[in-house]
Amino acid sequence: MAVPQNFWSRALAMYVDGFRNMTVGRSLWALIIVKLVIFFAILKIFFFPDILASEYDSDAERADAVRSALVEK
Image (tube, rainbow, N blue to C red; front, side, top):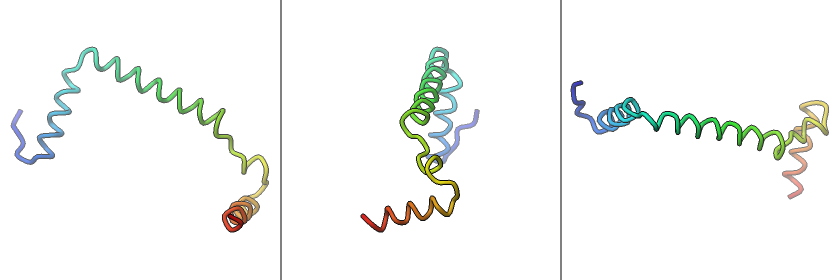
């Protein structure tokens, strides 16, 4: 492989080469990604419900509710 002269090209080549030569690291990165997906999916479902969609029927009502909440504070 030819050595690139640009700093960013060399840095990118270093990371690409490092990820290409990983053995145990690939399974660890896969585990980390799976855990993050599950973690954020559970957070989204249980801790961040869509309150505006459940309380208001149309986009105009949602917009008015947000606008009034912002103006009152």
